[in-house]
Amino acid sequence: MSIFELKRNEDDAYHFTLKANNGQVILSSESYTSKNEAKAGIAAVQEQAQSDTRYERKTAKNGNFFFNVKATNGQVIGSSQMYSSESGMENGIKSVKENVLDAKITEL
Image (cartoon, rainbow, N blue to C red; front, top):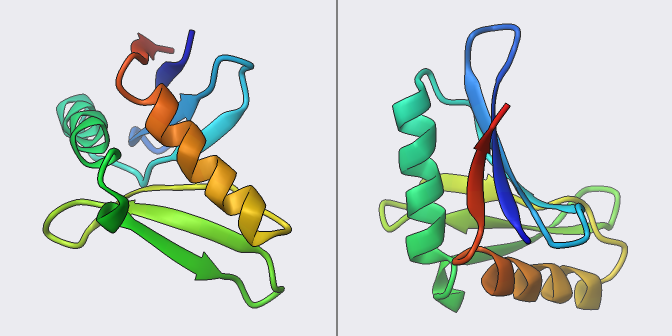
């Protein structure tokens, strides 16, 4: 089962990750000042993740690939890990689309 893990860090900020069925992190959020904002971020990812236009595909300076999921206002609501190939990045996007809707929220 895929899950959103919602955590509070040392700075009292909140952060979530989306983990696939195999436990691999496939998306990480920015920091939020409150738990409610982080939960709203999760809801935004769930709403936006099925639309390919919400994905911003990028190449890092080191040549690796990654993607961001953006809200309708253009704000980044989640970022992927780094991939060594474009096809790996596309598989990461596919994994987010497949896992995001059924993911349960777990607070750590």
